[in-house]
Amino acid sequence: MDGTETNRRNCASTEQQKMLDSGGNQNGSKDRVTLKKEIGLLSACAIIIGNIIGSGIFISPKGVLDHAGSVGFSLIVWVLGGGICALGSLCYAELGVTIPKSGGDYSYVTEIFGGLVGFLLLWSAVLIMYPTTLAVIALTFSNYVLQPAFPNCLPPYIATRLLSTTCVMFLTWVNCSSVRWGTRIQDIFTVGKLLALVLIIVVGMVQIANGHYDALEPQTAFEFIKDPSVGQIALAFLQASFAYSGWNFLNYVTEEVVEPRKNLPRAIYISIPLVTLVYTLTNIAYFSSMSPQELLDSNAVAVTFGEKLLGVFSWVMPISVALSTFGGINGYLFTSSRLCFSGAREGHLPYLLAMIHLKSCTPIPALLVCCTATIVILCIGDTHNLINYVSFINYLSYGVTIAGLLYYRWKKPKLVRPIKVNLLVPCSYLVFWAVLLGFSLYSEPVVCGMGLVIMLTGVPIYFIGVQWKNKPHWISSAVGEQDQPKRLCIVLLALCNEKPSDIC
Image (cartoon, rainbow, N blue to C red; front, side, top):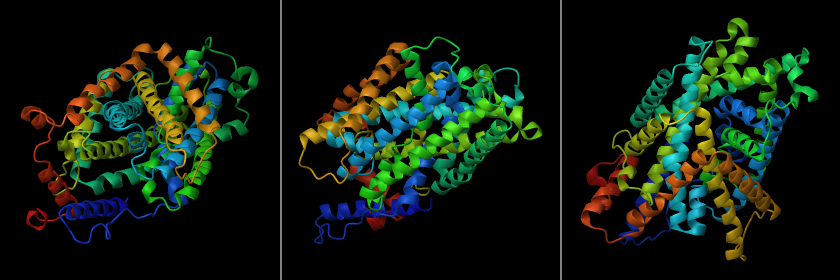
């Protein structure tokens, strides 16, 4: 994670060069500093795998089984979910080398469809996707911490919310205080999720080897707990997609990938099947020791698994999952605050969010906005409704981005595309995408519709805050457009650790 500091300095140097160039520097842009290409194939695989595997595999199995209706069909959903991620990843690989900008979806959609669509994607990410994901992970953390104290019932609603809020506020304070502290927490607590998954899979395989696989036998696995419907199957895929979210994170650092034409698709071919295998084996391990009803009745699946199989060492499981989710909260706080910062720097969010503390070099306003939005969402729904909520918006943004790939091919057919996937890949993804979102909206109109409404509230905000250039003074002050050069200077000061007299 020490590379974070290097990248920040590189970015700062780039901004300084831009300021000098605009001020009449004779050297022009010849010596302009850019981000180094230092991410090889192994690092690219680590980014994809590390961002996908997180708290989702400890949360989603219950929701997938509930909506799929049977053990066998839930395992099919997990495998197909990985296949859909692979299709989407290949489309993103083409976009990543055709539009070689870091920033992922936001950069591609802005380039292809213009500022409004890019702003709506950013708006939904800042207000919905990241805060809701943070809320889900925080609730999972509190459930796993409190479940051992309430073995025969659900932890109290107030207790889970208070512990979740305390955790989010503490990690916000850590990230406000020091970038190094935040990255160290991320490195250390990643071990927790790996330990938990390895332990679950190994113990589950031992169970199966000893003949404990009644729930996995074909005649039992496809006994439906309730009558399935297309809408419920769509919601099962939404639940699984939450666990697979993060497959597109490599596109946020495309500019730093060595030989992206080769390494982007290779990283996808290696990482997505590996994650799919791990997720499928983890679910098989769950069913080696729990009946479908036991899994559905459990509020913390991994805790129940540990209590049944680990005996006196059952305490290892809730601790491992708590460590994993604690690190997940920290990671999403880190990345979501940087998205706010980037959007503000591009002029799509109030410039206040682009300000950085002079001593700690942390985007404190952006972190506080993320923390506040997360705490609000913590109070409005339970875990599985929130997963449907955020997964619907996630899939919506993925579909818009991949539709952009087809539109860009039509708009610029002669543009050089180092990677060019077969048209069946984006078309297959979009067909699945349309069916999934359509039936999800039909099955959960309130949950999914609310996400659409919040996203569309960004339309008037965009025209007032971004497009309207000659705003009255009081509106400009409200959105933070005054003293923009001074604020940019403060940002550069913080990034470079320079004195005011040296830059400003």
